[in-house]
Length: 163
Length: 153
Image: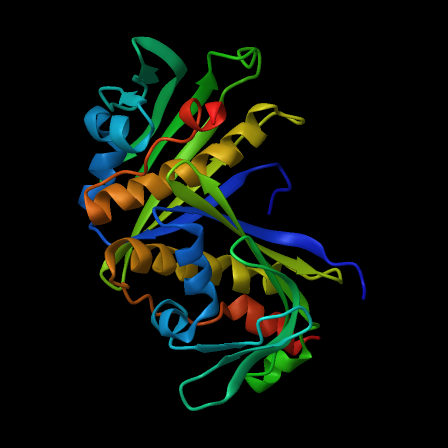
């Protein structure tokens, strides 16, 4: 496997247990609410299959589980399959780390890449992760998810066309 | 785009720009979400800014921009832990209303090369702003775990 280097890191603190945060990261009942209607499919083991699916069943992201240590660490490879033009993006790695912080937890999301990825492409994750993980925090703390409408940044789409 | 080191943190808060701006500039609220630190200033451009806890000024600065409820910025100079010799850096908050909630963007920049303040604020801001979000959405800040209680555990 090529070497993947962390390029985007987002940290949030959530008033919940590590088990609850783990459940929110790994079950569709939660991802549907905070991850723009996506279902998650995850084989609960190292090497297991991973996918994010749209409500119509289309695969948005596909990958494999490369770290599985509930409720502490999850990492998956991340190949975007939809929209079609995003398929050109080389696979990246997304990992989540959950660490108790007093009575709360610190959740760290790290997006790592194996190539010299342009800032314009990184802007996708840098725009999306704060919205996704803010929604996850709201869901676990209040039971409600404020809807954040969002499109991939124009600069990202332009940069993908040039790949 | 400049390659100067900076730290940008974005968080979405189910609240209004007025409420978020008020929380950023109110000592009583900051004492709750900022783990005991009171943001102290009369918020006129050029006025002194300080983070006060237990009667001590831990960080000081000057108000650079005060444009409620859209933008706030102040210079930031730690007065503790041997960090006093670094020149002041700069903190800016931008508030945008998006889909009925607030997108809060905190940009901390203007650091010296090799700044020792930068890694400390990188560790600090996510906990402070997560706690601010919790306070405004649930009425309850995060339990203390940073600078103090958490270190002892």
